[in-house]
Length: 326
Image 1: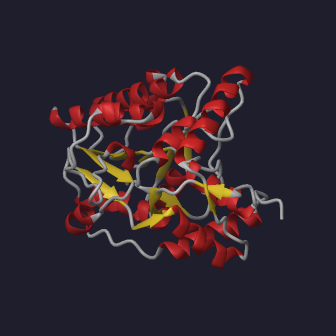
Image 2: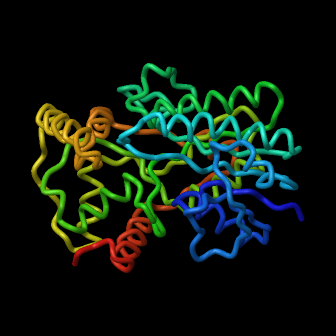
């Protein structure tokens, strides 16, 4: 049996992809940086860095399938060029190494942020979008990386793209920006909010969607892996029922939030510490990121479950692993 390489297995989505592969009996190899480790999973590890092409040769050697899940996922960075080196150059480096090694197929993890969001309906894979529509360096770098993946597919290398929405659930180690919303809620650190909308999805469904894409996806195609379109107020209502904490009732006008984020992000540039309210996060909140997973359901057989279960697991896991003050 050829090993399956997973990049990003030390992170949230990648960890769950590796877990599902192990449950299916696959031999899983994880690319890890020298300072990282894969927790709680029995996988083979290869030390390397997406930014170092030579270090990727041993990672892909002998692999039949690669899941490229790793990404530099931040809404603010002191040096934004780091995101482009990891997300864009790193994707190109890995795909070049995989093609040279004779890897049979690659599933590339993009983001729902790379699709377009019309005002009157959920966005889908065919909604017109361009680099100019991307807000912030994270989205721009992921959009550019997706174009790299599409170019490899156009040249005949079988790369399939998945676009997860906002995954939630257990083992959100860092946590992700979506996970941080839950942690802040549980810690009472969110007295007010901006009205916006997200498409939430159970991270376990996202992991299953990756495997479905590998089995049934078409090279060069994109598949949104999402579940429920919810306003932030609706998400807080669910969290209130699950956690017993009172949801914030006060809504901040967008202009006020923008001004506060401008100050917060400006101060971060001075201190080098991540801002409490990243400007790019507020800018993203100006548009409801509602999406449709109809294509993945139709072509892959993707069928996500209720997000309430994932929220329950997230709350339990964050509380049980020292992320909450009470």
